[in-house]
Image (cartoon, rainbow, N blue to C red; front, side, top):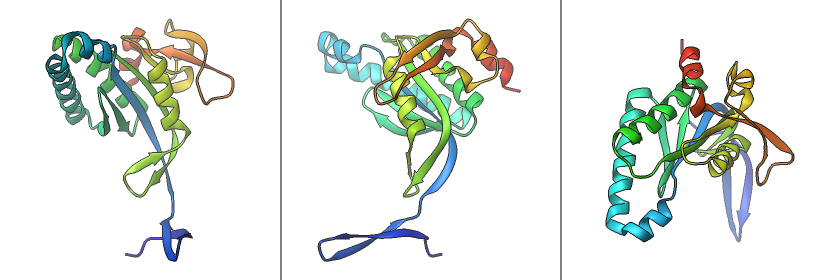
Length: 191
């Protein structure tokens, strides 16, 4: 079946056809081990690799059990992609709990966002939602799961609301919540 193309791009004497974009709604999250660089420096590379191996094993296990896909490994973190926000958030909270149970020395921090993005070349996602999830993860403290307050019903009226924060690359402040503070709200939404 022939692919649809948006336009032709030239580079020198070559003509390349760029594949048409396809918009999809997805839930994106970025998870990271807090303090990994310092841990590596203090404890050494072998200890860092052992910590990272445990963390990745937890993510693979939870991902397989929940249908949440690990889209990219990012050193001491990962980008996850899911279809439904509640399932994705539940999986992230489970990864955080299981990481603690596995005896990881470092806590996890994460960010999550939902929205329409471009499925680029069939295996990558491009759009503001991906960037927002990454910036929220960057802003999260150890043990936090930051998200826009409108990600799930009831969050804006819960104890999870942290207030407005500024994120690099985004104009104006964003009202955020720490979903790690309200796992019961997330679980009650998982009908």
